[in-house]
Image (tube, rainbow, N blue to C red; front, top):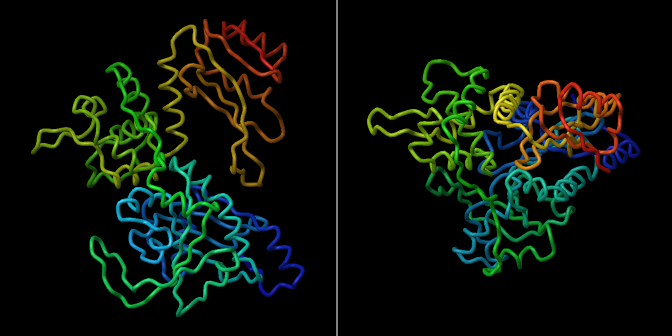
Length: 416
């Protein structure tokens, strides 16, 4: 797949200079896991806690894979270097990420490629973590087996060697001595990273604010009705939670600020019995209490469900709750880091409510045209009578204005 072989110096230098790093797309995750499992000397099962998967590419060819996960709970060399007390470590540990997997694929041979990829990864790691989990990363860590590797690429990328581990590994709730010590490397993502991590007076918002939600019986019924269109891909045997319960819990939790499967599960557990009943959660025959789905149940189902079907169901739900006289904004944005199969940037045109910030509909803008040709397709399914639509100056088109005022019975506001 990545048959580069032994390249000449010029070709190898071009490869290193033009390599790009990006997050793995959902459809590529299985391939990433398989390659890591087949070629990494440790194998691969899963990433622990908050995690990100990256792939380094050159002209759409995969060169390397990187996996980041939650930091190690115990690491004496790291903790002493930072100056952590046990209490402070528990408070600030989420600001450390562990580079638990780094694999240059077997067919790839180019000097300095590994350190180049690490440098590219460190530039974007904190921003990607912030987008995914609601908090930044201040320090990166990794553990290198000195019997197999010297950590040259980490040293070349500016990582700091701190010492060695004691040769223990965590298995479930216990630490087992396996005897293979590891070299400990860290890399601050900003000059004052250690000072920030060791300062007990710095208040850090590690997670987005998750709020409760007031959902009326009518709105809950509308939501469940919209979700009925989403098929259940699970085997009938062994199902404990109805798909409507998992989907409604996930949607409501995300609206309230939850980011990640753990946060969704925690939001569900915090719901009242009345809310759980309203969202069609399972009633335990022994305790007579309604139960929210667990994190593994939520994760497995959401990873297998059709994302486009959820998108359509949510649009149907929000449209059913849209009253008359709403203010609807129409705007297009280019998605950061998203690319089509041919490498083009992805641009979406969206219609959303001004006050609530809720997306009513969205359409992808083809690369061969612009937003003007997509407006009608975007707004056709929306009930807009009595509403006011706001658009930017690009849409100062007679046909667009006539469509909104005459066919959609809507007011029009153009702004620059």
